[in-house]
Length: 147
Image 1 (tube, one colour):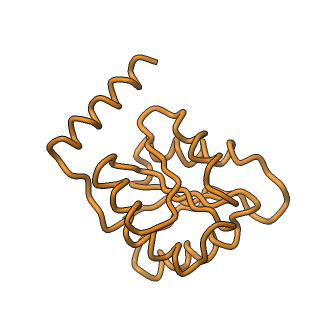
Image 2 (tube, one colour):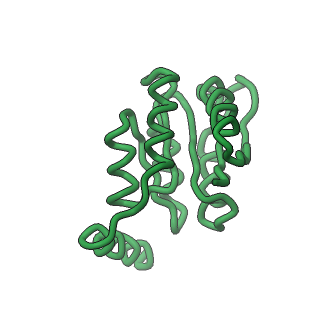
Image 3 (tube, one colour):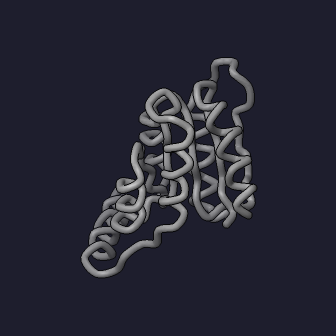
């Protein structure tokens, strides 16, 4: 799978570790910045990742920062993006199977690296369900078109 990854200054450790982990599992990783620990504004990089996902330049995205919250909010402003902050494997599976989340945001100050890897595995291994979940996703897409 081709996966976009991005981070702000507070998520550099996870970004580096997760990119290596994903490459080791055979995924192609597209690093969309930022690099280093100098303070940056997360919306710039969250939107860069979101645009890559929306344009289907990457199949899914992962953003790491301190909490995961701000980048999820910023990414969700881009049409076609469904980003969620996730802190456990069950939520990662549910986010994809029910909502077809295409950007996962992780908080490096909230969870540990091994849990982050397990969450990423669950996120990438899950596919969207049909039925009532597809109907709900269509309702969300309709709301997006109204804006």
